[in-house]
Amino acid sequence: MSERVCFVMQVRADRVQDYLRAHEHVWPDMMEALRRAGWANYSLFVRRADGLVVGYLETDDFEAALARMDEQDVNTRWQQTMQEYFEQPEGVRPDQGMLRLTEYFHLD
Image 1 (cartoon, one colour):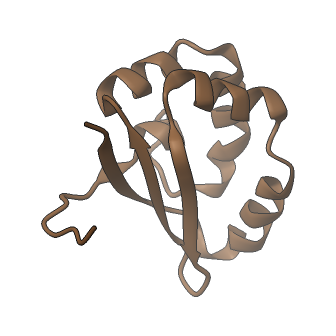
Image 2: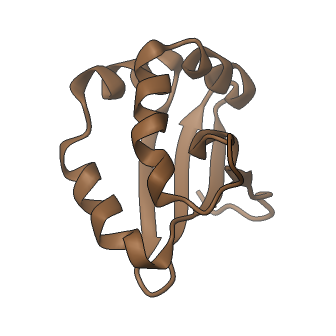
């Protein structure tokens, strides 16, 4: 059975437009790494007013999918380019600051 995963992150309110522009051309090798790591049906949503980002994906094992991405050089490079957009403590990559939400209802 596949896990449905939803998470939130916080983009700096004054950098939302720049962050969105950066996602207009996600690197092909980054997208391929996500697929190989088991990320499927992956979407990001933003509340433009304050930079709240909501992510959704489906995967067989989220912790394993995260670990596989952590091993990818392209992910390290991508996270470094995204760092400037996020409200994160120094030294914490954006993908390490995802706050997973608990699913409590689903309608098929």
